[in-house]
Structures are given as structure tokens and as C-alpha cells.
Length: 70
Image (cartoon, rainbow, N blue to C red; front, side, top):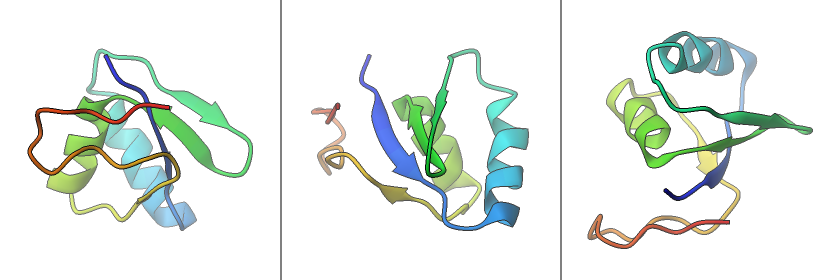
């Protein structure tokens, strides 16, 4: 399992993200500066819900086969 560091830019989007993260069985970590350590599953639900975020760590490969991790 890979861990990705992300930042969700605004408070409203962070609140929406936390609501959908509650449905995921995997853990996430909140770090200072509104940075979160999340799994690929978290990243996918953010994309599906069209919640804006940015990668702080290296982005996963576009082919979906190679995951970037911290």
C-alpha cells in the first residue's frame, strides 16, 4: 500500500473530504499545514467526488500501475 501526501486547499473542501473518508476502511493521517497522508483509495474518492486537492508528494503514475509513495 502506498501513502500519498496531499493538501486540500480550502476548509469547505476539507469538510466534504472528511465526510466521504468516513466511508473508507483504510486509515489516513492528518499532519500540520492541512497536509494528509492518504491511500490511493482516498485519492480516488476525492477525484470521484470532484473535491480539489494537490499532491505534496510525488504523483502516482498515470498508468495506474505504479504508485508513488512518500
